[in-house]
Image (cartoon, rainbow, N blue to C red):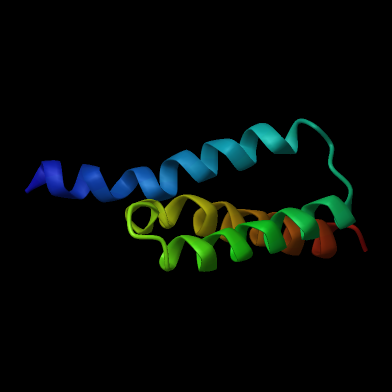
Length: 78
């Protein structure tokens, strides 16, 4: 049971770590929006690919975490 829960955690943990690493690059608001759009487009493409559909959580997780960063930037920037 523990192994199954750990198998599904990589789709959230890995993109979260990638976004944390990206926050140190001090990306602009426009660059973060482009990252979200690329993640959403990659997720859509990966859904229809026979082999890549198993890894669809990676780009969608990056898009989700990047969206959270954008919300935080928007709220704290005011």
